[in-house]
Length: 232
Length: 264
Image (cartoon, rainbow over all chains, first blue to last red; front, top):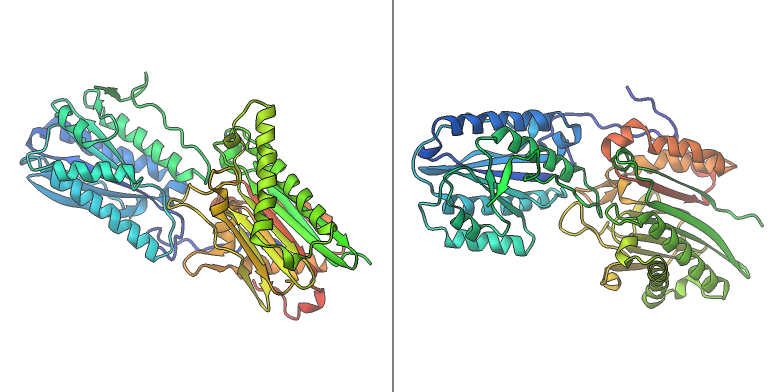
């Protein structure tokens, strides 16, 4: 119970965080674009799945992040699938992904860009403000479909500040292509440090979701001494 | 004749800035200007950008310079109804140039002093509101409250416009009211989630009703400064927003207006 004073805050009942009416907090959308093609089979996919659990656990420990961060997952392995549509952390149940098939990365990127666009429209329709979305691509290969148009969409989206696009290559990734897709320098995952990666991602998203107008958002360098990545 | 206005203002540092040991980067000030028979109340507040190294000084200097320029114009006989966009822009420009000068003096950049600016000038029969960036100005009209402007953010929640920006003139909003409201509030963006209803773009009246009612009843507004600060730092408020928070309340409405107890 909160005591009502002359300057008493009207307290808002806490229901689900997914509803815009119950949770009018600004949203911080983060779309994970995950390669689950055949080559990810074995330890890589297991570590990736464990990383997703870490991701949820870390974000769930931050009360503000719980209300503000929204996660979506698009997978590509044989087909492109929305493994999880945008949800606050409460409704995010880390999937257990299985690997198989080729790598339709171009189609997956196009779908991610389109989902980001639609999500912004939904926010606007509900009068919800939002932070700049992140698209976070993780792959251990290279596209087996056409990717030129996807690369153009990423460049255009970055130039117009529609979203931030990060790419991470696991050993075996085609970094030449990643460099042509991503405006930002692709990062190389050290070994199978998916847990460290998702720990960093959750901390970064928490920082973004806490930032106020005019604030800078300092991110720790993933290639630093305690990081999980190296530059190519 | 004593001023009919009661003004209450306070700021608190946000928990997000407190965590990293930063001081409050908001500033607020007010002055009643008498010119002949006419008295006008000037209210100003500013929110310094968290990423700017001298934001605290920027917000304070901008408020003082704006107040001093506006007060001397009004003392010189300018009536509130004659404040045009060009005059408002000139006052903002003076505040901005004051920051430029300060930047020169300490070998810094203008952007190091980045801050928003909100101002209200209220006479008996008119009011002019001016705003660059986010935060809001709320005034009473009849039984309800209205915002002078909806807060100006960029597309994203953590982006706004500043007095120090290169395009500040195009971001300046000016509005003239053809009546003198008897209650006005200015606040920085830290209070937006509590004071405004985003989906309908309206003012959240239950936020202001009890505060204005208390201020109307209190003969000495200064005694409310501590309770206001306490409220701004209280758990229910801090849970909704971790930014710096500043609130200025001004009323000349009489307590007799309160027929009913404030809404719970």
